[in-house]
Image (tube, rainbow, N blue to C red):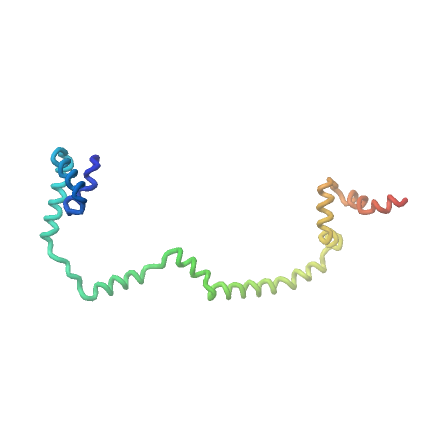
Length: 154
């Protein structure tokens, strides 16, 4: 299909073009051998299709086709949306809550058994981060800064 008129030949044969465009295509067909060949092929195909027997579906064909369609797996989008339904996420949230409650007491017990220095460091994490910005590297440096007010008094 190298000719731009070839795309309109089906509509030309079926009589679907406006009268002005129909006349343009008819004039073009008189001069373009490629379009003449394509038009002959299309008209021959239509003539052969008219010779075929009419298709008469069986009464239960519709039910068979719909049953096959229903048997197909749902699309991925529908399967993902099904996960967002409350009957799925409510039990999942319940299981997550049980898991958190099962772990929470153990983590509290581990906090009580932890190193007191680490607990103090965790409690003063914001202060430690400020020291890090200043460039203090060791606990001795931090202790000096912590007790600066005592050194100023002396």
